[in-house]
Image (cartoon, rainbow, N blue to C red; front, side, top):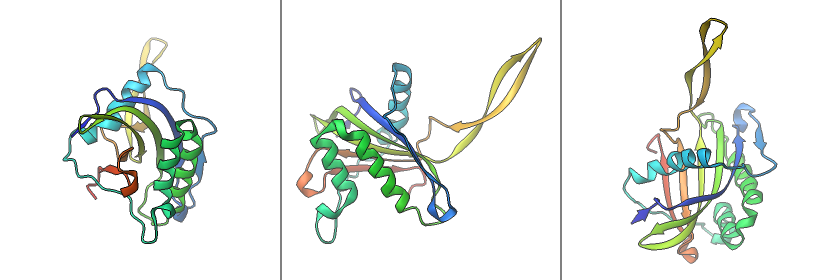
Length: 188
């Protein structure tokens, strides 16, 4: 059983992963994102909500030859062995996602890679690696005073009520490919 109530986002790195098929670029941030309490709280709800609302069907990483050849498994091992390397490893994860973005239906979007602590899994505290992606942008109205009138501006942004894709890789059962939960708003 998963309990994310006390979970903390220790660090998060943010990148933009385009679609190579459509000649969209890869943008890698130079440094981790500087979290504050307001953004941290919003991101916790945004990242974790899909995992609270669904049945817990755990997966694990596999590779036909050996797990040492699975790039995301290796990235998770590096982070769990040294959480201080999260940003460096997040850049590798974003590059891997970009290299796999060859199908025309894969949408570009922001990729968030987060190191999580105090995750309660089966009544035991553990840490986790979260990989999330926001793809769908929605229009919203922003209001601005213009002299004696109120003006409406149309902006685009991410709806914090709907995470497009995400996975949680728990620092459990490493030898079996870790325990992994995934979420996809497309229900794939």
